[in-house]
Image 1 (cartoon, helix red, strand yellow):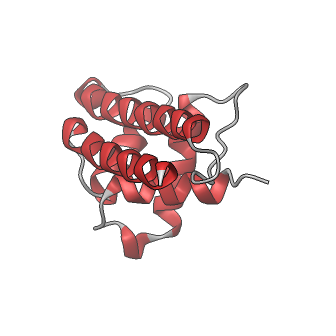
Image 2: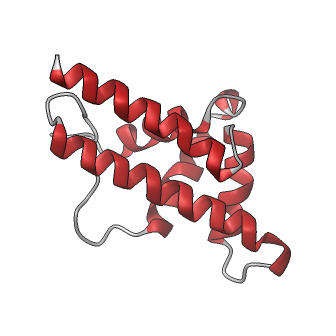
Amino acid sequence: MKAGIVAVAVLAGMCGLDTYAHAETGNEMAENCRAFLKEKIPSDKYFNAGVCAGFVHGVTDTLVLARVASPETIAICIPHEGFTMGQAAKVLLKYLDDHPETLHENVSMLAAQAYRAAYPCN
């Protein structure tokens, strides 16, 4: 029961992240993360880059905390050491690029799928 409540709370919280980030779909977040990953971010893309950085930071932190609270429910194991927001953005963007048929979907759910595929628990 506790695990189910934690899982629902995590997903509800992640779904709310995209509202604050001003990117609700994979299409919007892909654009933001491309700006974040540029070597030299154009000044007109600073906001977009920040949206991506904030989003991936929030999602990955949420997944780490959820895993601690309910390891039997959360099957995503974000690395504890050496993991950067650049890496998190690259993982998300690669998933979005590899699954263009899903770009219209909620970016929080897509992020969970991306990190589950990249960091499964063994």
